Image (tube, rainbow, N blue to C red):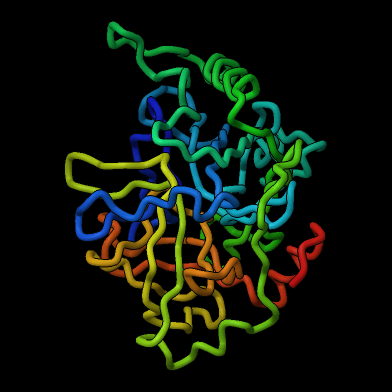
Length: 323
């Protein structure tokens, strides 16, 4: 599930029954699985969707956060629903009357996307983010254009964020996002000096058929650590969890795998969308990306979209990313 940004990261985007994900939940309610320097190739996404309605303002224009993984100095793999309909210089990439043809159209090619790998003790990547309300409790930036100018200027000037262009899977459909929930962002400037993730070959995950109790995958992300009826915890800090495979066969077949969001081991939650599912805790093989959760409280089952199918491999190859 992606996280909607109010002041920094507060309100959540929910979808009936299936919630496009996600953050890593805590281990048994404790401090949780802080990632530290284990996965420096995993970062946080900040992006603007001009068409998205918001309950805070009378006009549309929503700001969101997801997670993603560097597979090269300039290419990040994430979820399709984290890249679809991202704005292009503040303009819609989905509305025909307002579509910027330079962005590619059809919700693709938007450049109102920023990426950071910062993971310090404090969430300095959000210092100075223009708040929704002022000190008197009044709304700031009462128009969509004013909000966009303030927040995009802040992100462009921040030393922590790199601007990027966004590309969902060419068959992505927001009404059934989980069927083709792969996305790529291409950074304006490289993030170098890291061990980058790799992608699997065709049908790689089929080797785990029937082994759901004998294997642990590792999920990583910047999402919330706990969702309660009237309060949420965590977010904006990279965390990890080692999760059990519940079911290899998605519906339809070969679309996603189901992973356990166990209270004792942790799992994915809001803001973890697009974050990696690595084959093992010691591997950088990116076999899937966090896609959705079946519970609004980030418990039970989480879905991770497979990257080992022919259509996904062709999509990634178009950006120079091959197994």
